[in-house]
Image 1 (cartoon, rainbow, N blue to C red):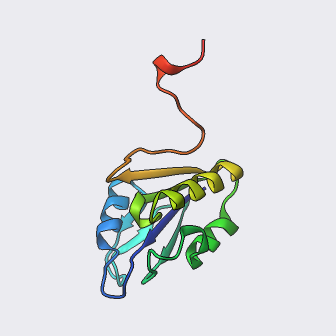
Image 2: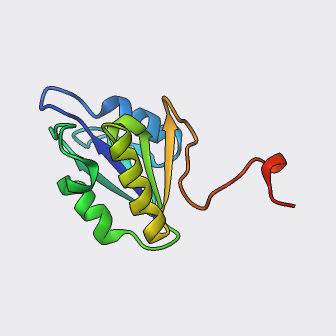
Length: 130
């Protein structure tokens, strides 16, 4: 399953930028007649934490609890940008460890660490063991 996670810190912020990035990746579909104009693509579970401060670690947020309940080995958790999920290096490691323990890949689409994936580990071809 493909799981998409989005978050904004305050009620005055918009999910629009994240939704555009996710649409470009084929995970959301632009629609007419819906409040925000986007819906998940087929086979995508969209989970959002609106107005959730980054002071709350990712693993403790309400929508991440739903991610944890839905995720199975082999699933891919995608975020538009890493800072929408993690607040600092400690949080990044906690999410990485959570993903690795459950066999869930974390995919980051843009910003620092684009194309970052946690599992399965992929070494550049020249770094592969011989």
